[in-house]
Image (cartoon, rainbow, N blue to C red; front, top):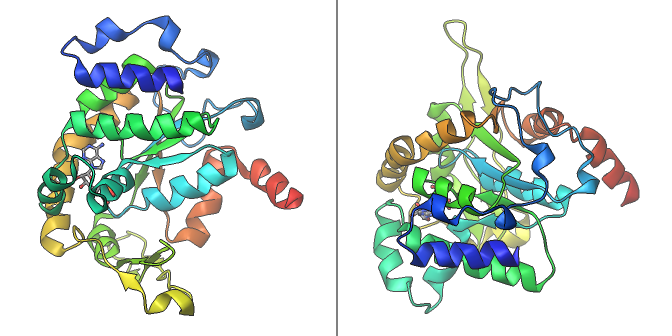
Length: 288
Ligand SMILES: Nc1ncnc2c1ncn2[C@@H]1O[C@H](COP(=O)(O)OP(=O)(O)O)[C@@H](O)[C@H]1O
């Protein structure tokens, strides 16, 4: 982690090509998990090794509102690795008097992407904090979001698996607009009730709201970039800048496509199944 962090910093400050930084000494030793060059399907995941033997280095991709944070956070708890969401790092920086706060406010509130340099700087600081705590492995959420970021990451470490979460487009905007955060405990909730009727052979979809407990209910706030206009712009930017990142990992055989079938109660067990992690959860709940 410390090495990765150092190299990310170097890379952010450098005008060298990504390839010039690629050196086996920076790479993770878990190369045996390198996936085959074919596209990974839900039934052919390369992660056959017991997760207890290693620390996962995973990436979560997906449109705004898809639920990356929810599932990445649950999996990080299950796997015992930090969940590192660059959106959270940006919001922390915004609410602090950090050096990038003013610059960031304008960019984020327009739904645009923050510069690669700033993101890598924030990510490096976060990795430094992880290393100081002795944490290894990670689930990255919201990074990489451009091909350049993916190349930078590839230049410094091995990513074992990239989970591409997908949700029907009709649900994405409503999910973003329904998002609520408890200003006191930071809990994430969603007041949207998605009820898409089946038609023309397409199945319907129901996602119940995720309502806050009574002690959070009066303290709910919304993100300043979760307005209809800004969410639409974020979705447009995702299609333009971030969707190519799916292809980047698909061509390297690391992409696991996962279509969310509904809300958390239906999707979570299916995701664990797709990741070959059902046993892991059983063992963890038995030990709790
Ligand atoms: N990897 C990144 N590169 C550039 N900007 C980022 C990155 N991660 C987060 N951001 C900025 O933070 C904002 C919020 O990110 P995030 O919480 O991941 O939102 P979303 O719900 O759109 O996935 C983004 O709209 C963008 O401005």
